[in-house]
Each structure stands twice: as C-alpha cells, then as structure tokens.
Amino acid sequence: MFFSVDEATRRRAKSPHELAMVNLLMVNLLMLVALLAGSFMQAGSPLADYKHLGVLIPLGTSCAIIAYSFVKAGRTAGHGPWFVAAHWRLATGRYKILLIAYGVGIVLIGLGWLLSRGQSDPRMQDLMFIALQRVAIAPLLIALMALIMLESGSLSQAGRGEVPDGLVDRFPPPADLAPAETQHRAEQDAG
Image (cartoon, rainbow, N blue to C red; front, side):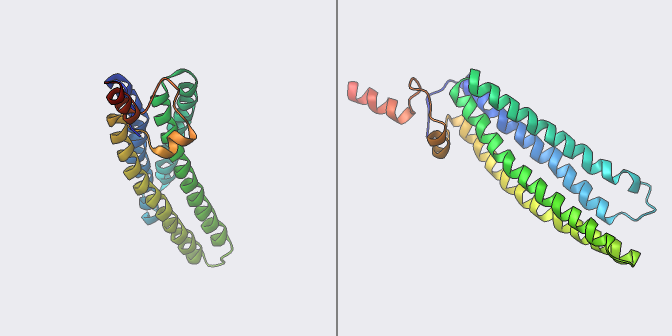
C-alpha cells in the first residue's frame, strides 16, 4: 500500500533495509566463507587456529546488528513516524528468519560434533564433523539468498513510499496518514 510521505521520511525508512543489506552481504557472507574455508583447512595449517574466530567474529557482529535493529524498531514504534517504524518492523521480522537459520546451522554443527565424538576412528571423527559442518551451510545460504532478495525489494518499497499490505493489516497506520490511493480518490471526489 502506498502512502504520501515526504522524501526525508522515505530516506529514514530505507535505513533498516540498508543496514540489513550490509549485515547480510558483508557480515553473513563473510561468516559463511569462513565456515566453509574452515571445513577445508588441514590440522597443521597456520590459519587453522583462527578458523573459529573467522566464524565467531562475524556471527557476533551480525547478532549485535540484529540487537541494535530490534532496539531501534522498538524506539521508532513509540516515538517515530509510522512509515519509518513500519519499515523497521519489517526488517526485524526478516531477522527472525535469519536467527532461525542460525539455530538450524548451530544444531547441525552440534550434531556433527556429537556424532564425531561417538566414533572410535579419528579419521571418521573428522569426516563426520566436517560433513555436517558443510551441510549446515546450506540452510544459512538459502536463508541468506532469500533475505537479500526480500530486503532489496523492501529497500525499493521504502523509496517509493510503500508498505506491504500484510504489515499494514498487522500494524495499522495512524488516522492522519491515509493511503495515497485514498487521498487521491478523496481529492477527485472533492474537485
């Protein structure tokens, strides 16, 4: 649904989606590359000692960005323009999908670690853990690709003054902010 909002409000509504795109493209892709690269490293590699940091630092950064977004969405919902608050709410709703993907990945990696501990052969331990570590990348990558597409669409919507209809139904606008189609029809009826 389109709303008549000024350009400054539209720019502010783009902020949560721009932040999400930075998080998804720079931080999360880096984490997936580090996770995948870590699964290919040999035990004696000079970088093998740092493979956990290559995953944990981007994961921590992403979680910090997500936490900031939820705090900002809460503040904006109480004190900011409805249009901007709606877009912060939209971005944080998408972060819930990313958090679920993190959970699935962590469960798969944890399962690989547990199953590897049950093997008596050290080579089978490594194989079991590495196999499930690589499988854990799939749900994260799929979620990441879907969220990048959704966020790029939302970035465009914010720039056009649009809020998805489902979000408008769950988070109705204030009475003084009528949809652009309604305002246009009211002006035609009056004129």
